[in-house]
Image (cartoon, rainbow, N blue to C red):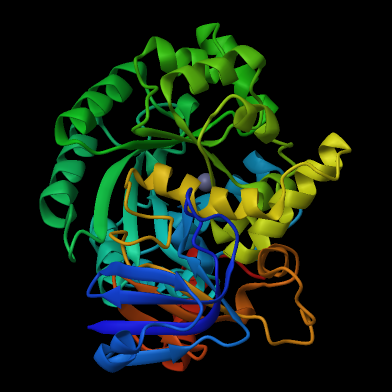
Length: 450
Ligand SMILES: [Zn+2]
């Protein structure tokens, strides 16, 4: 299908065309961007278009990548506020996760993915580590297939030291991952991908980590893991191995452009240097790091050394939303105040982290820009709001004013998943009702009273 988006403030994020084309147009041919230009679209595009979207008083941006979430936590959000990481895991994540079944996984996946679309994310990396029901991995992939979002499941695993309910043997991990790879990798026109998700350095044995990374590289898929999220965890690593997280991972041969390290709050300068030298991708989750009082990641230092930094909400259990537009503002403001520098992280840089940094995390060179040949993942944000007008700079308004409720239209792979703030891929009201009931039954089974 051909789609013409016209009259919008187009933010292409291309190297040769910085800034905003206002007004501008975007021409979509099938699953790819065909043309991007300033002014009114050529008459032949108007004539050839099967669908025309008028984006007057709206911004048109590349789809953002939410580079780290745990979708099942949509059913848990708000349950254990005001705690640090380990007490939070014990109060909410472990007891509920331990009894969650396939159907609940599927519904929480639909809910979490619709939330992502509504807040401007066209691609999501889900670090899925619920395996009490072995069918849960498939349930999340099925949800992603139905919603139509670009989706990567980073299948979480732990084989040592972790909560017994979430631990697996190395053979179980490799068998489940092989099934996932054979069933889902590159399905849905390449929208669904899989990668390994070793959960945390202290829950993964060195041997299994090396085995899974070797297999990932043989398959050409990535590896995604929480790293140096809290000071306590870094101390645990020093006690157990004598090494900080990044040095331990490098010793095992784990670093590289195919690896995403999530959080990276407690790094020293030598670790940042090794991340930069190996082209490893960092995923920054500012809201979660504030919510769990984990700390402030040294993002400016990483960017200065050329580290690709993507943005993410983290799971909705520690946020409690998955609003990527909100994440843009938090990212900019957190690093300004932390560095006492109002020029730290300009709006354009933050948007680039969400789009181009996200493309690096996704390991896909045709994402993150509105440029001919790139994937047609496009988000249109309504700027015609008393919360934003008058708008002098569309990028400033996107970062400092807009939030998820302002996202108007979302296109993934050339398919319209939301238009005029209406989700087209499923009955949203019915889904919310079903999720409320399923989450209620789940808490009852977990023996948790709120
Ligand atoms: Zn996480």
